[in-house]
Amino acid sequence: PQVLKSWCRQILKGLHFLHSRPPPIIHRDLKCDNIFITGTTGSVKIGDLGLATLKNRSFAKSVIGTPEFMAPEMYEEHYDESVDVYAFGMCMLEMATSEYPYSECSGPAQIYKKVTTGVRPQCFDKVESIELRDIIGQCIRLKKEERPTVKELLQLDFFQEDMGLKVEFVNREESLAGGEKVELRLRVLDPKKRKDKHRENEAIQFEFHVENDNPDEIAKAMALTGIIMEEDARIVSMLIRNQIAALVRDRQHLQQQALQQTALQQAAVQQPPLQQPVLQQAPGAQQVPQQSMPQSMPQPMQQAMPQAMPQQTMPQSMPQPAPQPMGQQTTQMATQTSPQ
Image 1 (cartoon, rainbow, N blue to C red):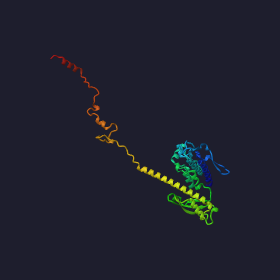
Image 2: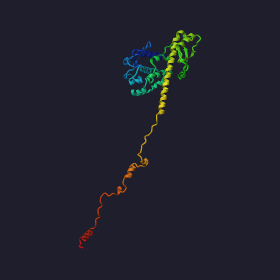
Image 3: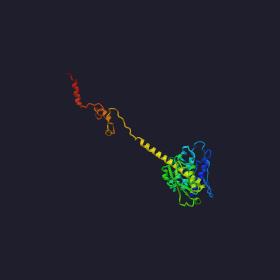
Image 4: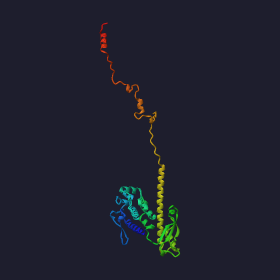
């Protein structure tokens, strides 16, 4: 909607003002609760700069902010202005879906786990506009190097004020796939800027060489041939330049993703399979199958026990002579004492 575009454009202008100060100012707690709108004029202001900090070095420190809007690098205490771009993407997500980001999480711990692993909020899939979803996805990328700057966001067509002119790709998917030449299309939306020979539903299609062509020269050529008015040449040149810059940035992002995927596949192929350790036996030792050994006592111990003296035949005490009758004992004694 036009209202959403207007609000987001004003937020970006406020962030651009902060980030362009010497030294840059990082808001660090940008969220919809800190964005104020004047009801009568629709003017948007960014408030609550209590957590803002100056980027005196190449990065800022301290973990502070609202978990749902904090970029992953903020937890590592090493970040820059791109954390505000991440928070801006979450603000756009909340405004587009009317849902708080990561409302499915029960606490900061779950939010931290999803944010640091690059898992997007569930409400991201509820964004109906493909163009808006693409911009939000760029802002909340896991790596800060892959996010656009505030200045680059302001150059996107989505955030441009209604100037009556629009430049777009004939087929953006084919243009992303590569090639030095791309096909662009110029639409004159404002009837006051349209020549009589151009109808409302017609557009001017032209080729553009990404490396060699100059947007200023292309726009001047259109003005000389009467396609556009001379005072609109600067606007057309800016629109062409913004589209090409966004295309180059998206191509680089796709190339980085392809390189990362290739590196992961190569690492998976080169990783040797896990081998189970093999127990080494002493030289000359005879291998005994494990299943033939009794559970009560190992077989070598059974072989080492003496077999000549079984436990059940060993006497526990010396044998005693059997008792004899009293008469026989007397006769024996008399026989031993009689003279020979």
